[in-house]
Image (cartoon, rainbow, N blue to C red; front, side, top):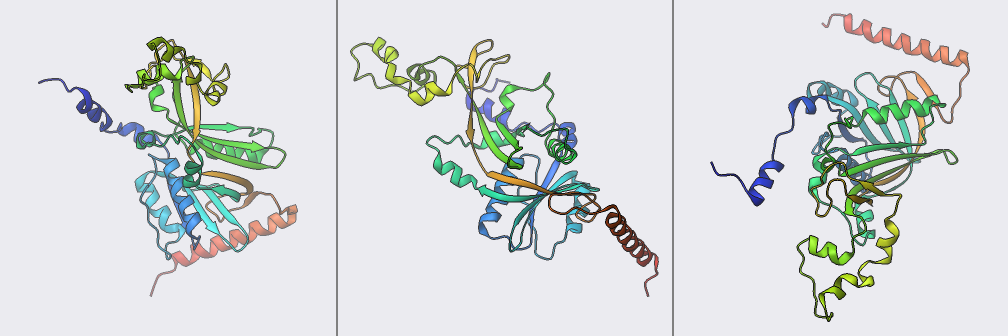
Length: 329
């Protein structure tokens, strides 16, 4: 049988099935909304689904009559480990991240947000292509202090929401996106960013890159071909400022993009994809939105008040169990 070549070989490699063991071990998410949230927040929810690909339900649909219990009932058979829920009140927009099935639930208040389409329209050269969403993003957590228990718990929940990476087996060509959660101690806000990772050869002029990309340059303005390569104007000032020691690395593996060879220096560039959010950690509670409050940013209770609330929850739970045990007429 003849070997596949060119486009046929690339298409066959692209359509290889995902390893079942790896797919089962990876955390999966449901991203949905509760109640009426509006057109813009609905688009933000869809953008967040795009961030969580490929381990998310991209076409999940929910109805108004669906309650949280409905999502929990189907999460187990589908291997879903986390919920991301968007809701809106008259005063605030909230995003909740829940660990299924027993919690905890972390509630964030959204201070600002920007949609993917707005980010893309502001960029001169957006870096959006479908293939980068076939692999999960690389997670970066910055400034999450271990001295603060609430930040440590929130960081652990965020970390477990994304698949882990084995540094000894990972292929660099599979790392195409990056998700950043950055905590600002002064404002006590968490900044969310979503980037596309671009790798380009370091120290290479723009003229040489055109030849590497199979683009035929226009040499009509030059007396000699050497003028094309030695023209200092071919490297723009913005590109010259982007690259330096802070983002240049020696590649331990060969990359699929042209010019990036093993043991050669390449520059790592981040191009923002979107969405963009500023979040405030408001509440952490046990269970799925109905357990004991572990942390609250604005409400503080005494030990007696905490004990009283715990007794009320225990009585409600006991009444619920008693109703289940009663035979139905």
